[in-house]
Length: 270
Length: 270
Image (tube, rainbow over all chains, first blue to last red; front, side, top):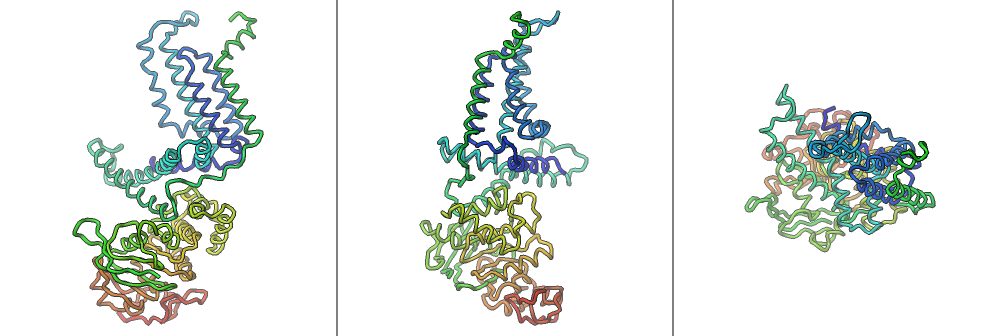
């Protein structure tokens, strides 16, 4: 299978992951949505040098992966194109911030190194949390949850259509890449001088398909707002999950759990 | 009843895709729309559904195709697109079928029932929860027909319903079309299909009606067809069309003995 084919197929596999059965999958979409938002908010709010505080936030994705049965490898495999970008964000910090903040033995670790690690971890944590939300909740349900918290219909519809149209774009890209490769044997990738026309063609083709898809929606009575998935009423478990996780996130942010655990172990010598 | 009165349509100024068309299709009629590439078949269907601006008057059951009536007309008239991938935009067949029903105000319970009913009628119950991207071309086509039939339209338009189908799936689609009782307008280059499913044929050429009459007459007129860049159906030209395959000289008939709409056709010697 071609790389772009694989990407298109993989993208659609998210719907299959979301249709699985597990305690996490059965949680109310709004509960998962709120938890994910709070998690992301708390994660990014850690100070750039607060590595010990941030590290504890790994527990949430770790727990969710375990309970949902979604392999961690699937997550990192699907995020393989985005992760390098996230990792590159703090790459230059060690060059600008050279002041040593801590020493391990005789090795001094600069503030730049710590802030780079913090940034990378923040990115990874936020991405995995978002992935977990998408992999355990069908997109329709996420959108239904967004509508429930009064996010404007136009924005939610745009979100859903964007999600759907990414696979359309990937399909067209796959067809075009195959056609290109067949006429450029032995060539790696697409030559830079063909990029302009390639992207232009891709845009035109996806617009054409988008137009036909939209017409098909119009013919079936679409008037700007989707009828989202039938989201069932929230149960006690959903409320409990939200309250407990959000409280834990706030506690993790307020108190450095790693430091507290350390002081417990060392008898307050940390 | 569908009525076209002096209907014209143009994509570019001065270049008419449809040119002063006049015809009527009565209730329950099965009409084949044939013509070379660019003759205006798809344009006619899109104009009928109000997807393209036009001049002249198109009416569906007395309702003029224009702004305020579009919702009602589109509810009465279903279109099966040439490319099923563009017809199915939800993750599963079930969700796709529900989309239109919910948009037209049906309750979830009723819609659920309707989906099961239609899938049962077409004998494709197993496709209900199938992911669209995982289906074969034939399955997608059947699902696309189911999506349209679920809306319970009074008229069904089909744009190249057998394109890219293998012989077996083609036969299944033909059988399905023949079993429908609604008014049908089928655009196709597959003249054997038209012969099997339609009693009347409209031949388009350069946006104008070149011929309009009984399928047996028009599809036997070699001169007329060749003048409009078409050829005799295989079963009439001594090829291997349905009538020959079934060993039923002069009849278009299925394995189970049911006759196609264009039966009583005598092959023409080449």
